[in-house]
Length: 52
Image (cartoon, rainbow, N blue to C red; front, side, top):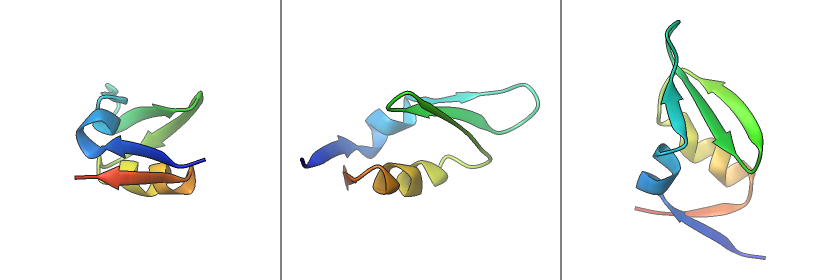
């Protein structure tokens, strides 16, 4: 199955945390990231094709 998402839509899943960084949720998994650019790598690991 091919999964596509816009980069902007993926960024909506990144919520800032008070201690710094972001919590990013994708397909029910939660990731603590320090930079929003990490969203791309995580999405690609889940098999997404990113549309910019």
